[in-house]
Amino acid sequence: MADSNESKNTVLVADEGYEAAAADLAADYPDLRIVCADESADLAAQASGDVAGLIAGAASVDDELLAAMPNLRAVLKLGRSYFNIDVDAVRERGLTFECVPRKGPNCVAELAMTLILALSKDLVISNESVTLGAYRYRGLKPEITAERKIAFHWMHNMRVHEVVGKTLGIIGMGEIGCELARRASVMGMRNLYYKRTPLSAELESAFDATYAELDELLAESDYVCVATPHTPATEGMIGAGQIALMKESAYIVNIARGGIIDEDAMIEALSENRIAGAGLDVFTYEPLPAESPLCALENVILCPHIGGGSGTNRNIELGAALAAVSRLLAG
Picture 1 (tube, rainbow, N blue to C red):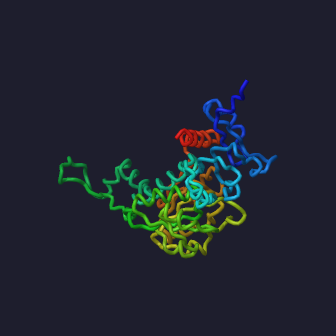
Picture 2 (cartoon, helix red, strand yellow):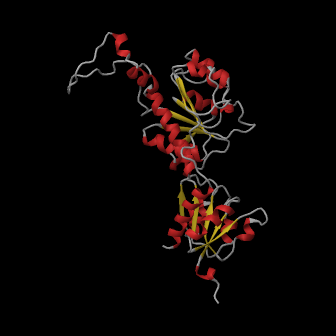
Picture 3 (spheres, rainbow, N blue to C red):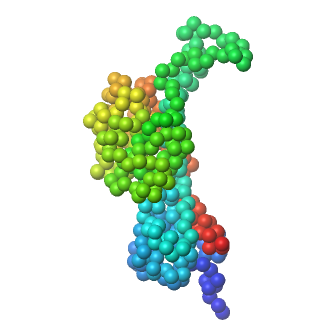
């Protein structure tokens, strides 16, 4: 009896940790034989002439690895930032190459953009002004409207502005930062970014972003978004000295981790209007203590760590990648 795997395309998942997800999803992709990298075997040892499709998240895909898979037809990057892929080697071999966005980074980037837009419209104060009837304190009364008869901007919110033409500084240009840059670019913003290892010129062009040293980014940005992992190296990386470099009209957005910013220094700057405001989804202590001074500041928008949206897991991420590679291999 012939091996049932003979009619299937072998797909190698280059990153460790996807074995359980692959087992759960195997029945949904009967045309694929899914092989996952694991700690017990070197990735290069799992690469062979049987492999037709390669899925890589953060795993390095270089010329040597590609050479070990002479019948490879498609490379699928899990995530948009293909910093770990030797794209020249992929192209020289005439392989199909595609990226599939990851749900998690998309969710967080959406919140970051939401906070930027909400801050630009002073949205919390604008909402409270209407719901609390603040027009009464301005000597106004409700009147029927017409095409040319409206109570335009009756609150006179001084912080309301447009984001088009503003500079967004992204600290940490991983998947979240790259997804945010795409969205900001569509809104007409200029993107600066800072990370330990700058992106390639190709990726900078793809995400419409320009590298800047941290001090330069802080000084030039109208919005500073923290999107870097929280590690010993990034603990407190945005302190009083860094905040002092920012413009008085600039805003901080943090969708990463609270410990990356010196919270006390940020509160002091916000209280003294040395920066214009902040949009925060993360804090040093979570939930944010009710007695935190942040709760009393009018130039701050606070969220209960909702950046992950409806949530994600390896099954969702791998499922999207398998669907794409199955389509690519089917021509």
